[in-house]
Image 1 (spheres, helix red, strand yellow):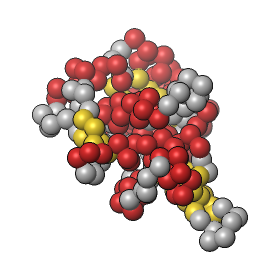
Image 2: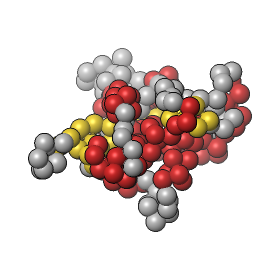
Image 3: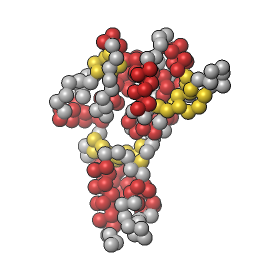
Image 4: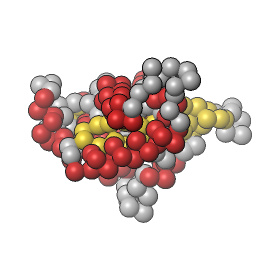
Length: 210
């Protein structure tokens, strides 16, 4: 069954609304029967049209590392967060430091992270970051013991509304780990992501935006 250009746009818009995760152009093509799939150029045109249409609204269509996602604008989080009655999330300072170091200095080994932080990284921190699919092993350092090298993933980019790593603020703009952590914290709050906290002296409490 063929669809009109208007229906095509409606289908793509609805799919982006209900998907709950980024969709690629190929995934959008698979919504249609074989032989009736719109071209990638047609879908791209519709995506650009939707981006322009949502520009003045409370929603935005963003191109992320894993595809396109329709989402609420981050600046509206102080109001939208009131839809959730949960207590403010408490995120491990150690976890945020570790994630920031991996994001900005990748590829990096566990020992190198510990050298910068001056403390040992607990195994649950690396396990949590791996389970969230924010980091992955990207190789081994060519030194005795062949320690694993860690880097970020497409899921990390999607979580922080990035398409490429070069969209991260430069280290010249972010002068210390505390400021890096603050930026990660804000992004995680709006993503409504739960992270298990470590001991109380390593925890920080988010703002009321969550």
